[in-house]
Length: 453
Image 1 (cartoon, helix red, strand yellow):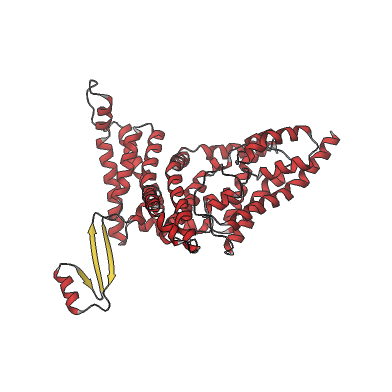
Image 2: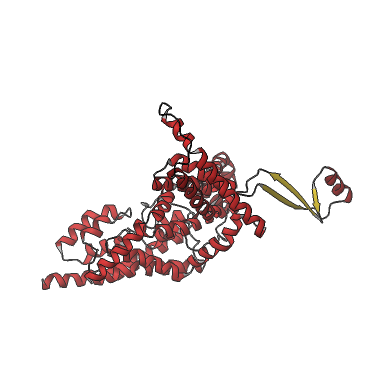
């Protein structure tokens, strides 16, 4: 067991500290204020617009229209441009990793991403039923009529589909390409050097001109070649052949159970499971969460959200009180434990456990390499995730589509994350009860171990 533990910690430690994965993780974390702002805006509109309209109180929604409009502006400036924000954040973090100018790196990554987006937006409108004179008039105005459709093209327009959550994978790919070029040229001193008397800010800006220009050109050339050879923009290629398959794999119940189990396994060996697996949980499931948010904002309905399981689903249904659903463990200790040290730790941990902060009990019991609690620690979250997944798949509750601060208490988190769905809160609390039923026998068994000692 000791040899296995040492080897596991060595391998997982290398994974968790891999600098490119750390840069991805830190980029998603740095976007948290933007994500939360957009989610708050959507959540407020749920209570100001969607719920009142569904209940027939349209007058209230009409009165709240100015606030609803402001929330729409906030959403458009946050989640709707998520890929653009991520492009800058990733460039900044990768520049820190390469020890080059991070602000320039963020701007170069941002510009490189924009350079790969299609430059023309075409809108097609049906002309079915229009008279010949109307069609001729449109043609005379220089508009394109194809069959019974009117096509209007606008150069320089950016489609929201490319800069929102759908464009995150493209921003990730372009960010790595552009930052590799930028950092390589800087490290080889292929830069414009100015005298030491020049202010540092000016010196840094000029030093980034040649590497930055090269990085943006390389990104643009990649996008151009992709379009010439396939007829599709780079963003569409990435979405079709990389993002969609990965997102599809992430939505199976087996994938959800496996990832939930791995988080617990890393924690069991003393490693922060969420940090180690952040590139997967944030890189895939956070994308699903933002995509669900975008679809809800466009349709004002949770009936046809594209992704069943998102980043917030783990926190809402499988981590009440923290990893391992330790809030249930605290309750079990209060009711059944006869060990004074457990009761003391539980008393100190309970207030924080209500807000999903479980380090006191995780390291106070401790849970790390603890054979007494290894089984419930490893199986409780996967069991809870399975229950929530099946209930969501059945349509009883909607998928999680809003980001909520992780310190939100159990039950309330699920209620808010699903746009005010009461049944989602009930499922979260039911999972807490299930977790309690699993933890309780092991707490009672721990009493016997104490007696033998």
